[in-house]
Length: 173
Image (cartoon, rainbow, N blue to C red; front, side, top):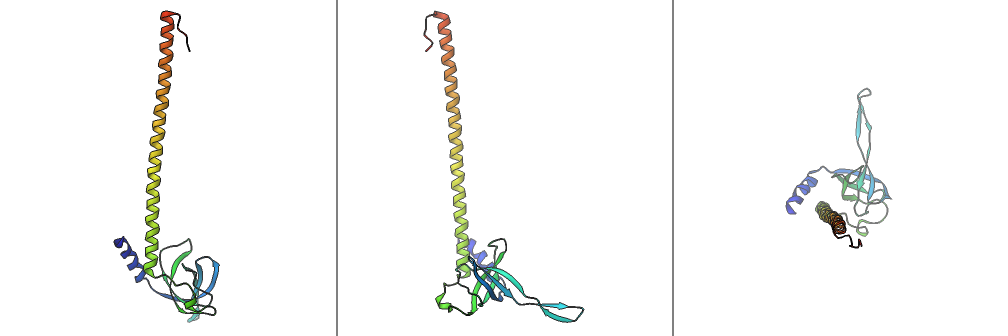
């Protein structure tokens, strides 16, 4: 397990850190919208204009509030539109102080959680494969039993018909 954690952890730690402000929080579970400032150059006017970007960010502990200044980092994809994870709170906004909120998990905690989910998925998949294999074996055995019963009935009918022809007095029950 340690060998699989280290590459993921190294990947998370090597990612760049982006600073932004939480625009909306609490509308979607474990998700906040963060606005990151930026500039765009207009070549015609030879001037920079504001070009803010908004990101949906994974907040595993639901600890962020509107107005918080946070550091986010790109991570693995948590949903269709969430590709960033909260790294830490730089400055709290209006509302609860940082100490009163649930702590933000570290990169190591996130990697451990991801690996645990992956291992659980692999275990569920292997159990399902074993169950499916046992079910197929049971169905095969049942089909063999059905064929044997059919063959036994046929043999019984053949024996009864031969006995009746030979002796003429055997009951067919």
